[in-house]
Image (cartoon, rainbow, N blue to C red; front, top):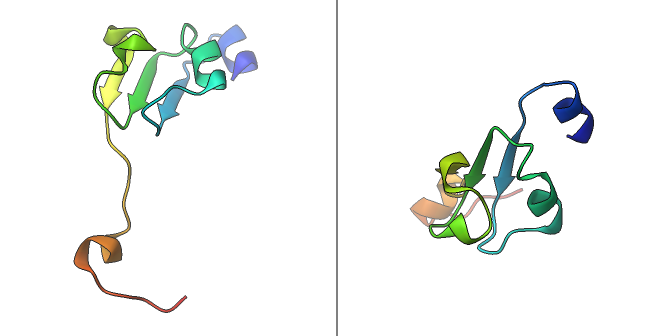
Length: 69
């Protein structure tokens, strides 16, 4: 990510937790956008870069069906 940012390549961060991780906090100023799973992440990241995307969930978890793996 650091190298991409140095080369002018836009980077996108994804923070899946309600508390920002160390690496994402270090890269926040270099990121074009930051996808987050929870609201109120402005305490960690610039509000204009935040996109509230949530966390992906497997469909079978939503349906309550068990699958064999």
